[in-house]
Image 1 (cartoon, rainbow, N blue to C red):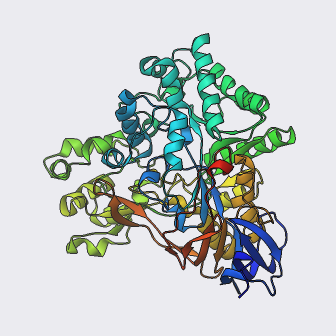
Image 2 (cartoon, one colour):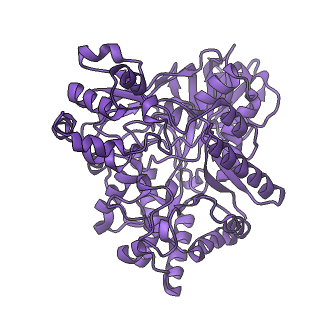
Image 3 (tube, rainbow, N blue to C red):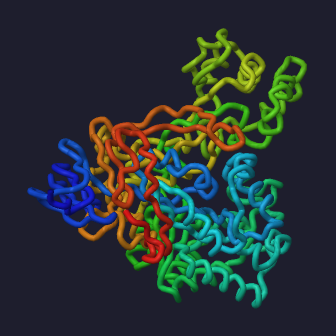
Length: 582
């Protein structure tokens, strides 16, 4: 019997290559984790044959904004992303991360990540091995893990500043000395040499002014209410970090800095000559949201006309957020003070004797920056049989029918159902018009999943599924060819992926094969599967017949195969000395 020529052959699929070329029916042959041939594969033998008749064959999605820094230590599939066509992720976003990290700062680092990204502290304490102190050692730790997806790591700037300046001075926003700037430069170069893809930072405060509130509000401060070190870092430090990428001729940058100083953004882009991710641009429907979005889109267009590679991370997804008052941090500090994590305390504050507390809560705004108004929040599921009739109704409707203030309505539900009521809301006041404006601009990278963060209510790792199911198939806002370019090739270009994001001969075989008509995502649900017996919200993809990562099938018929063929992509590629046999 003749020896098979290839490891896998995918036959008769509708190939959408990610390069905006017209779709066509053809075959793909895979050998040693790479695409060896695209065309007609007659009289060709392979170890495995996949019949893709009637299915779309496309490059896997590349997610540039995740916080799977902790989750990678217990979940090789990085769900929800791994079940929604994502084959590569970038970690270390927003300047938050775990390396370099001296032993005495580990607990503080985990507490910070609990506050800013809502990852349960006990989960990290149980799962993270802390078998490193330096950034190169951290990458070695990641390299050794089983992974069903590829991982590309930023250098988060917060631990960089702490390592170079000391915890107290970094938090105080003191300007680094010349020697400290040299240390910061050496640490970044060491990390880039080891395989980092660039650097990230959240800069929402005022340089050198830790007493000033951050632009992002309480949701983005450290666990003790103080700004993160990058919030008070100096422009000179950002310039230093950008110059290093320019001198090296590699890497990219992710910044959350608002648009208070567009000149600095443009200087950083010119100095680094690298793509910079502007985070984030939202599809809000109110007049203020429209004005800000259109201003930003025009600015991005102007930057690109001048050769400056500043891209907007667009919030193009709108899955529901589900939550209970066991943990909910998006209704402000007043709510947090009286609700959770003690159900008895919350119930006591909800009884009729707590009129003073209710009055204080009534002063809280009914509309918040990132989510729908409180009256628009729905009761998704109640445990108490007496409350079942309220399921599907908004808090505003319930309040109106009872003649009570909406805050009192929430208090009543907690009193009757404890923390067992599951609520449903939406983020960013998303409108179809807003999403279309983002998709119409070629300088917008869809998504910003925040995968691995805000685990008790966020499931945005499904953004690629939603893009195709909602905005290509149902709403017809964008072509399938354009969607796959935006979901794969464009983020690959920005991240410096050298051989991914497009289906072509010689490229890594990161491939999704799906049923276009059945592609969809499930409503979020709670599962208790985190280390430390913690729960999280998740959803599932449907219609994914196969997902291949480095040429091996990791998902089949929407289910994991428990094949861990993902890799740590140092500087955007698998280094030959570290390559695994496909």
